[in-house]
Image (cartoon, rainbow, N blue to C red; front, side):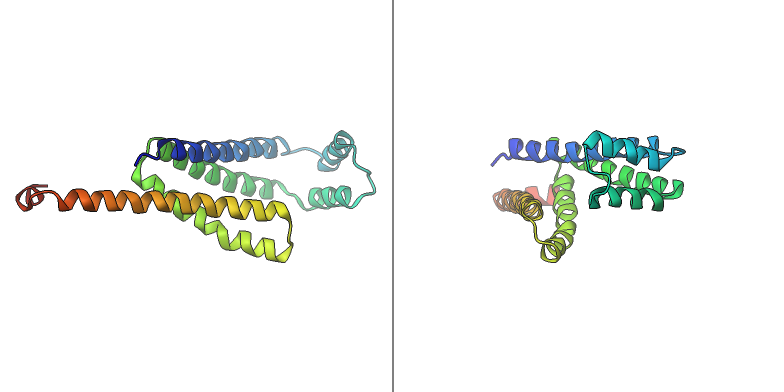
Length: 166
């Protein structure tokens, strides 16, 4: 059974995640050597937030704690993450067996963290992310199982002499 369109849909989602993180890395790099308090002032003004709100306070606290080294660390992690997403997207788009395993493993790694986040601070968006991730992992797992069955069935119909040659 062909799962070409399903795999390509997952590939597009993974590529979009990689592109979003890559864009965030560019934004972070643009913050190097800037007065982050003035950047926060502009952001709060642009978002039309109350400067005395908790969200504004959170932005100012984050700006105070942010260092050049912290930005470089975040960019490095972001580049590694986006590279993984692009590699996975490429492999799934081209229906590579290794990419299916990569997708299952890399998707399943997040499930315990997403579950913990949902239990700690329940919110419908966290539930949607968790369920979406579980659905993708189960879908790719299903493809792996089907492909294994097809390979086993193909092998069992081959004559013993041909199997020795393969």
